[in-house]
Image (cartoon, rainbow, N blue to C red):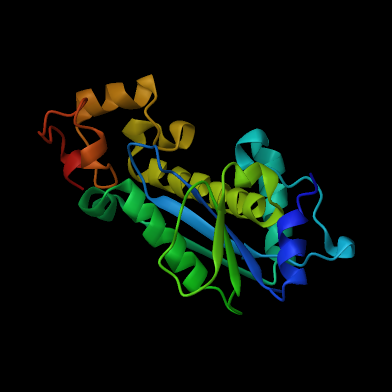
Length: 211
């Protein structure tokens, strides 16, 4: 299927600013959930080759595509929702909030929204959710790439602040190295407390864990 199918179909119905929206970071034990909303031109002359589900691309390819997407996009917005909010409202609601903020932050605004998965957003805009949309829909794939590159770079910066957890390697996900560090060192301020209860006994055992 042509990745442009959805955007072109909605253009026929009068929607010319179709935003693709996706998230990265629902599963990690630490760090924010990050969402991107992207409106791209659908003319063949401006088509970006290689857009796909970000997880299928190498880091080098993702980074190159993210820069091309930023240059080409008619509108683009990236938003974060931090661990504290994830703990307060749960990851599903935090993801919805993050996506909503990304769409609302688009300038110029979108007139239709395509979201990955089964996500309905609290927006006064027509919308459609598409399972595996990051692999099937051009603008959702672009959003997944931008969000993934942004979050990976963010976690590398957190790694410099909290070197004991290996965030530059695991991006906050629950690798054996990361879980071992939680058990030995406690948690830091970007950990999701509701996600680490199996590994963390509630005590902060090092000065760094209180930062």
